[in-house]
Length: 198
Length: 431
Image (cartoon, rainbow over all chains, first blue to last red; front, side):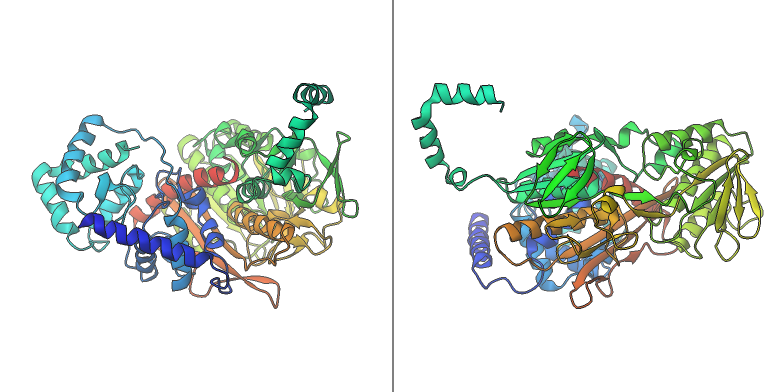
């Protein structure tokens, strides 16, 4: 079932990518590539960040990208700067940028992590998170977690837990379950697990 | 490849093998690759060189820079406070070489827009199909009586980072307890609009720990400055601004902050209304485009006019001017702006080589300032071209500065974002 979903999605992605290449498909305005290039100063070349507080966005699902940007536009995330930037783009431009980043290969930077904590996190992930963040949280159709910058994940989880960011469907229940199982160490364990992945 | 090696190569491989190789690689048969010569190894120059090669690996890109490494002016205020070292903001050009950019250490002295040749102090000539000039700023040495390039060895500007930053840092460390630092802030437009005020902040951070009775006086040629409300908020919280015992004091132009002359021996500044004497004096002079922009006839007044769709010079065809030296209103003269402009220029150059019209440009600026411990602030903007007026305009309802009176958590995060921003800008321009 999951495999079918992924297949359908891949076929759709391919079709859309081909459509984008057809002459006449490009309307007036900057290209998706040109728009996406402006992000690199903060999110790294083609979306692979080397700055620990800035998330990598290479390989990100285009719908997750657009949803994130729209949430920033509407001040529904605990933004520092992204709300101000997201409001500079139209829906169409956000889609174009999303497609650009979806096609980029994610380059990860090794991070210092606690191996024992990461092992506990791996167990928690498998049990509570893997269903949505497939393949250990590698780029897929939920937010990328594998190899994502730990300080960024730290900020993100703090926002979810303090109610400053809305939980995606089912996520709160899953995080609560992980915390019920592992206590205060649940979130650090998960973050160390994601930080340990290469 | 030297001649001897080339002869050896031909002798050993033979003419027929050479013919085969040529047929096997059609682009070789079509002639030499297009050549782009980039003048200046700062943010604009490095970014355009990297992105030209990224977008078209067949291009021959040569970057010519006087120095063998680049010391960023952004984050150099943290060197003044001792929060980081000068080495941590100094980067070599090997990353660009790995992208296939030829990096030449030499100084460009002339550009011939007719013969399309760049000449250097080392006596070399470089032919180009497109030339990108990104020279940064120069100083108007005649603007303040008594202040010139020689005096700057003792009374630094530190507005191009490197040895100048070291001089200012050493003087701060050697200053007597309770001494007075004077920063002379320049008139608009200048490189890094929030920079003088971040400098005052970082010096205050240093003094808070090492010289708690010291005072920092900003003498300004302006009546307002970038991120002013946020700086005042930070200064009030961290350095007692507005109280009788404030560490930082700002004198606007209207209040007599405009400096007319300097007596270097006594470190006394004559401003419009009164004199100010400092233990450490840092004069950030009024600015203009870097010297090569003048030598190459690329300026109109102090800065270089460009077509904002491409950043091609309005004065000479096939020469592009990026970054601080360009007249790119309403973009500020910032690292991120230069990085953003460079990608627009790279795409435009490649479009021209391929006989295509330039696309619609898009630009972003983001700029962080660290006011003190756990207190970071930012400004951001998304820009679009108004082709009718050749101006770069902010997208409505977007951009702006960090919110006033944000939570300590948000201010703290912006410090970590400032440092991550730095890593990604460096990565994107030269690694």
